Image 1: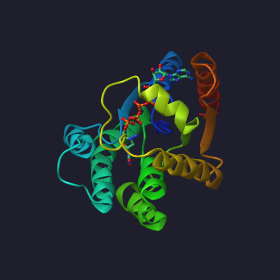
Image 2 (image 1 turned 30 degrees about the vertical axis):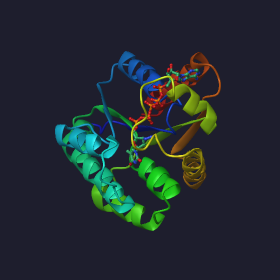
Image 3 (image 1 turned 90 degrees about the horizontal axis):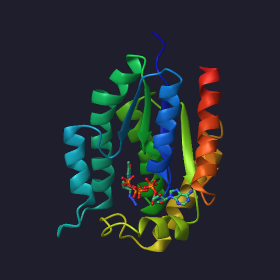
Length: 209
Ligand code: Z5A
């Protein structure tokens, strides 16, 4: 059986990951493939517990290194217990964030060394890298304005504007570094326009499968 395709969706908060993942999944299913969706940090019961630890605005400060290691601990659970078994069963996997989020947030945003993050990625998931990464991109103000319509910000959402500027710049650099894997979609356009690009992309992926 062919290994399924592994697709990740990335971007700063509020750029429309959830809204576009819904279309992505619908299109893949329409083409007759089984698809599994998951998210990071999270995706398994223990990884979802780690997510709560990471997002809660508790009293104890979380050092940057602990934050990075917790992201990768959750990723190890998701890769081994959810992503790899699904790919091996021929399912397509759509993951809301993956190691590029650690590169962008903990590397770009917090300033942790990229070589360390790349080594952790290699250690935790070896060559289980995404076949394609959709980077949804918009200026920080746009993402924040869309995200602000929701409830109280979590621990990471409470960071300052400059933090998210660094995260976005890092994402754009990652896309430059691996142009064959990344597809950048400008999400300042209407949701319908972006979703129609997502549909075209899926058709292309299916044609190449
Ligand atoms: N994190 C990390 O630091 N390191 C890691 O390794 C990993 C994660 C894996 C997880 O958050 C947090 O963890 C995240 C990074 C960090 N922290 N931050 N910030 P998450 O991924 O669960 O949540 P999020 O990034 O905050 O995503 P989100 O806010 O849920 O946004 P979204 O899914 O990208 O957007 P949406 O919900 O689809 O859309 C937001 C609103 O905009 C909604 O009302 C839509 O209808 C609207 N929208 C969407 N697209 C459009 C367009 N094109 N036009 C108009 N309106 C639109």
